[in-house]
Image 1 (spheres, rainbow, N blue to C red):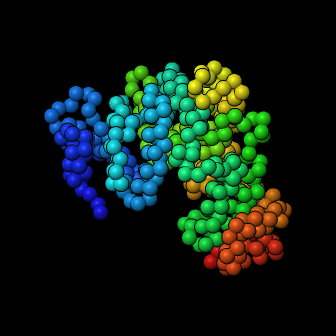
Image 2 (tube, rainbow, N blue to C red):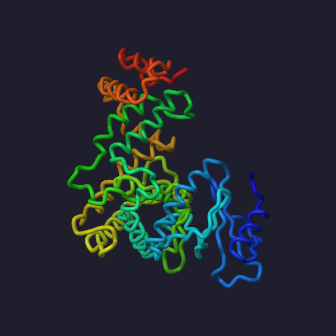
Image 3 (cartoon, one colour):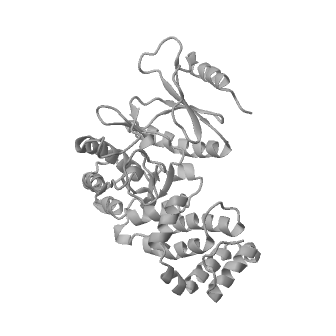
Amino acid sequence: MTLSIAEIISEVSSILGASFRLPTYPPLRGGSHGVYVIEPEDGYNGKNRCCLRIPLDADAASASTKGTAILKIVKEKLPVLPIPAVIFQSEHYTVMEYLNGEVLKSWNTQSLTKERRRVLLDDLAALLFSLWTFGGQAQVTQGTEHMPTYREYLQNEVDRGLRRTLNGTSSWGHPMYYLYQRVKIDSLVPRPENAPIVATGIKHGDLNAWNVIVDKKGLSGVVDWDTARFVPAPAAIQHPLFIADIPGWRNDNVPGGMTFEEDRAYLEHAIGKLDTNSAPGSGSNSQTSGRIKHLLQTSFERQFFELSLHNWRINDEYIKRRLRFEDMKTNRNAALQQLDDFLSADESMRTLPRVIEVQNRLRNDVNLFEPFV
């Protein structure tokens, strides 16, 4: 059953015990959701606004349910964090605290002074460090006692794309490239001495400039938690997308050639101070000192790899920059081993026409990267 906006606002008014309305200005930007500001009809006193988020389809609703569950846990445990409180959630919509301020929209060294950027980075460091060291609540939302290792996490991510391309249900991607990305997984797993004691962290999943709310003082909050998940720490401890300089990622209103090495170094320094001086109860301890900073400093290859599995532009860049044709030609046996390992988890796929063709191409060294008919 689909509810109209009027029906939702009427239901929210009944639940919250106050009559709400839509203001006259247009909805907020939202890719997978309709996002609206609602306010009491009897007047706005600066604190009564709420944010109403309505998923546009079943996939958006499912993602919202998972991400909002994590947001609620974090806000309950760490209420001072600059993230919205969840006021009410139903299967049709979510009502959240409205964060005052304006959307950052773009991280640009021409429009944001160095001083302004550093204020925001200090605020982001405090928020991210809290998320990356939150760790212990993973089982509450995962519904399982097993949290995958980072190697298992990457393999699951690669295999999701590989399975689609072998089934012929993917709109982009090539099974050969996924097999060679599978070969690279071990090189991306941090050495044990560099792994934090807290093995699990929270990954926001979409930390772009449109999900950052700012005011005159600094960071007002981070919104859009639909893709937030508990993940292995190396998957969580990565730079915000707007300063990561990942090839193929498009930042809005940023001139070509503008890069953010200085901002990344500053965020790493800010995280380093927190990593060394973490207070009791923060989720970190003296045994983690320096390790979270190190994971952030070495995050580029991990982040580039992970994003290439979900974004076709980044995937194209990753193939061009990291999967050298000569190496793949001479490493066909490794790709065959990866395919066999993948198929061992689902023997029924061995008879798929595309699987058989991939095996033949690798064994005979012919047409490795030609498109499939």
